[in-house]
Amino acid sequence: MFRPRLDDPRRLENGRLHPQYLQWIRQHDFRASRAFVDCFIDHAANLLTDHDYFDRKKAIRLLGAATVNNIFHHDRPMMAKRKLPLVAEVLGMPLEELTSAYDTEAAERDKEAFMISMCRMHPARLMSYEEAKAGLPCPGCGVPWTGDRSADENERYRRDHPDCGFAGHSWGGGPQHCQRCCGFPPLSPEQRAKIDELIKLPVIPGLRKLSPEEEKAAKRQRRTERISELERTLVRLRRQEEEDRE
Image 1 (tube, rainbow, N blue to C red):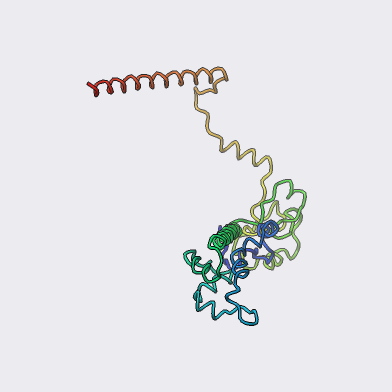
Image 2: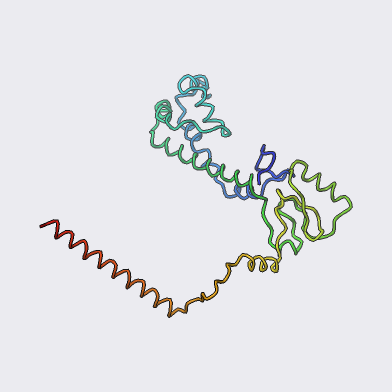
């Protein structure tokens, strides 16, 4: 399920930051996501003015406007990798070092893109039955699944989820939740057990499970048959080899 408005997938429609994005921020090394631009700046002595300011006009004249913009604007695609030799020549630095920094930043951008795609498609976090029954706040909106509906429940729901465009539902007549931000009501152990029974494969009449001894005997039989087949193949190949020699 995709959100109807994807202007900022890092946020849920109620304005809160997506929990997956918050977790990614805590674990993310932002130095790696700027490895290439930091490497460029550290070796940009040839592109400085007499007052040690970055000479953007000179950089554009040597590298091109698109290349310079792609280097410094993180929200734009990275510059083409085929231009690395030219950039290394302009900076006067080893191509291997610049390529390593480029690959590091590209890998981090791929990780960020994957995280954003997860935020687009998945709810904040699906709660377990035990968490919801205990009255813990929903990770998507902060409202518990349990409890009675307030008098202004509909107004509260429209205020928290004005642009979600997804259906709302509740758990046992409790507060209303959004399918996009909050996910789905958790299933009870009894419901999960019933579903497990429904999806089990049907039992084929006359088919029973083999005992461990019978399984070993069946494996030995299959192995013996395979060995016999390979021996017959070997005899046939040797006979063909002898005929070819004659």
